Length: 66
Image (cartoon, rainbow, N blue to C red):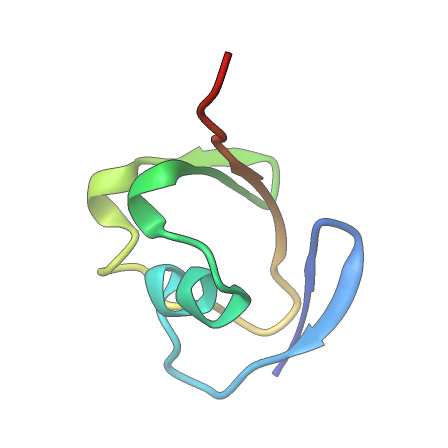
């Protein structure tokens, strides 16, 4: 399936969840905010929602520090 993540095209296997996608990118699903097709995805549902062909994601990673 073809999707876009932060403006970049990406291929993923069918049935991949949003949490698995985030982990493939190398991020921790507990430390991100995800927008899917212009709607915020609640963090509690990231492991339940499957990525669909044509989805567009904006993923923001929180970084600590001062």
